Image (cartoon, rainbow, N blue to C red; front, side, top):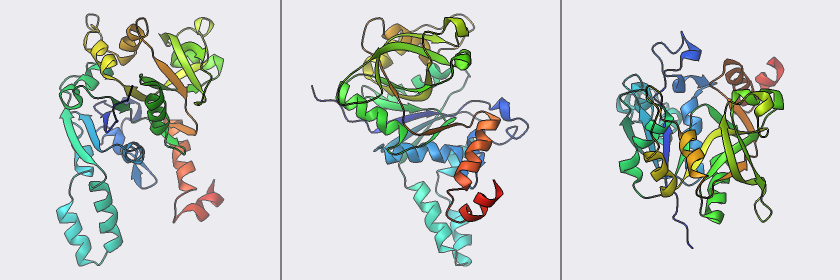
Length: 288
């Protein structure tokens, strides 16, 4: 059976970013810069480098700066042109033309599952990828591309995984599953999923990271997953329901991951990418 080509990405960015207060009091967390590039741009570039043509950003009324970052910067480019800063203009235009950008407001903070459903009229009955803004990878191929490759082979939803120390499993969504032999490496057919278990109850040390391939069948399950009273609608709940009836795979992603939703992870990412920066790398190596 031929799989539908994936051309759309949904990126939820409506969260409050409270772990980075006071920096995020007026500035979206996704706009915090790793050297000179906002975190959200890393995520969008990963999607585009993986073949994505349309980016659906799920925002809130506090995230106007995210929308502006990918919009046409007409006045700024005019000022740069007066100063002869053509390289800077080229860099801005590259951001604006990376993909087709669609912005959808999530009016209430009702969970990541609800945020994804805000895009359901756009993705319709197509498979799509979901990327959360805290998980930045330095990898080749891009992390989400590794999941798209698995989807194209399996014609089934796939979630990103990473190995974590057993003593840290209480921090993550943890899966259980069976290793799959074949052309694809690091692949598991999942049979269980538990959110932030006690260490002694964790079924494995395989944790979920914020990258997913969502098929129409999984989206349908999410639509029909009811949130408990006063609780959020979670994608994890829909996946737990889905794997009871259908195939759900996980793939351990190759590459170096940074959790930029954590202050230490953000600092590590800044140091890492400073050492790779085309202008700063020589000085950065000596600083750190």
